Picture 1: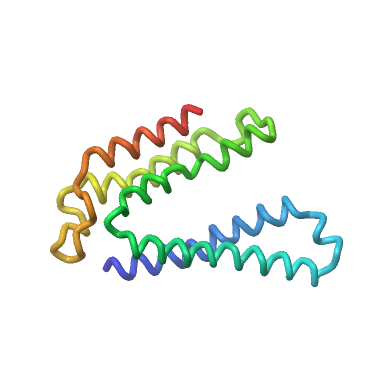
Picture 2: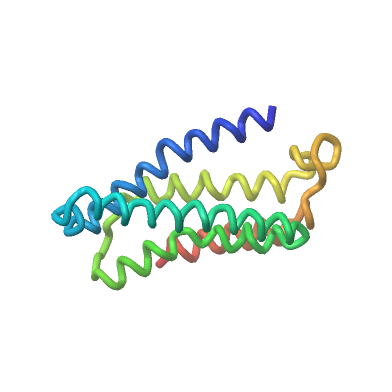
Length: 153
């Protein structure tokens, strides 16, 4: 069912993506490890507080504005922007493998295309409530255009 898939997705997120964030944080803050484990624990606790606090706050905001969920979805499609900004600041030319970037972009865009493009999706109103403004070809076109623009940069 949908609840089981959501639970498994969260477990996958908690195990892999947060671990990936921790690896990146550790690489960027190597100097903290010289200060001792107390300092590392304090900085790491602050990072987890900001991360999970932002996650909970974001969920509360989204739940209170479900009529504008499509705007949040389109905003979340800009996930390559931080990498683009970092590459510009660092002067990197092509730090990521093109196959990886295309694969991630395609799989993350498929969810939007399914939920707002398919008239008989899970959120069609029969099993779960209908998503605001679904089905909508405009939202699908905007998501694909946003992906194309980010990949073009």
